[in-house]
Amino acid sequence: DAGVIQSPRHEVTEMGQEVTLRCKPISGHNSLFWYRQTMMRGLELLIYFNNNVPIDDSGMPEDRFSAKMPNASFSTLKIQPSEPRDSAVYFCASSFGRGPGSPLHFGNGTRLTVT
Amino acid sequence: GQQLNQSPQSMFIQEGEDVSMNCTSSSIFNTWLWYKQEPGEGPVLLIALYKAGELTSNGRLTAQFGITRKDSFLNISASIPSDVGIYFCAGPPNTGNQFYFGTGTSLTVIP
Image 1 (tube, rainbow over the protein chains, first blue to last red):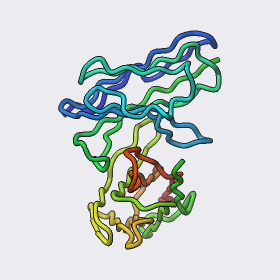
Image 2 (tube, rainbow over the protein chains, first blue to last red; image 1 turned 180 degrees about the vertical axis):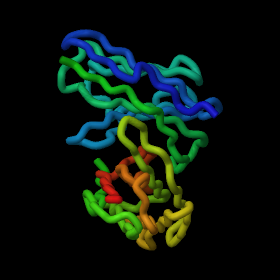
Image 3 (spheres, chains in turn brown, purple; image 1 turned 135 degrees about the vertical axis):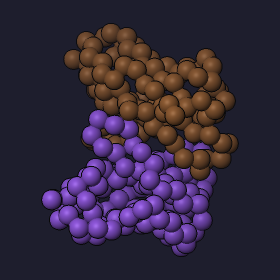
C-alpha cells in the first residue's frame, strides 16, 4: 500500500528563491492537509482541501504561501519568495471521509532550509 | 487558536516500565487520535477514539477518551526501546473542521 508521498525529502534554498513542495495523497482519500512543524510551534495546520477544493486556509502564514490541488492525486505548496523563517518540516496528510474525525495519514515530510 | 496541552513534556524510563501520558484541551472534542513520530518521519496513527469513555487497545498501547470530552490518556505497558519517539494527541474540536495537534510527549526508553 503506497502511503502519502512527498517530494523532495530535503530542500535547501537561498532567501528570495521560489520553493515548491509536492504531495501525492493516498488513492481514494478525499481530504488533503498541509502542516508545518517547528520546534517552537509544533505541528501547525496551514491549509486543507476537501474534494480538491480549499476549505480552510486560515493557517497560511502570509501571501508568500500558496497551495493548489489540481486533481485528486496531486497537491503543491509554494513559497515565493522564501525567507529563513520558513525553515521547517512540511508535512502533507490525507484522509478519507467527510467528517472531521477521519484519521490523518502523513507523508514523511519535506525538510526545508532557507539560508 | 485551539490549545492541546500534553504532559509530561518528556519522559526517561527504564525498559520494561509502564508509561502514562495525557492530553487536555480547552474545548470539547468529538474525536481523539494518538500519533507517534520517529525522527525523520511523519506522525503515524496509533489509536483513534470516537466516544466519551471509550477505552481502546492496540497491542501494548491503551488509550481512553475522557468522560468530559476535554481530555484523553495513553498508556504503554512494558516499554521497549522501539517505543522511543514523540507521542502526539490530536483531534477536531466540537465546532470546526480543523485538526489540532498537542505539544507532544517525548519518550526515551533506556535499555
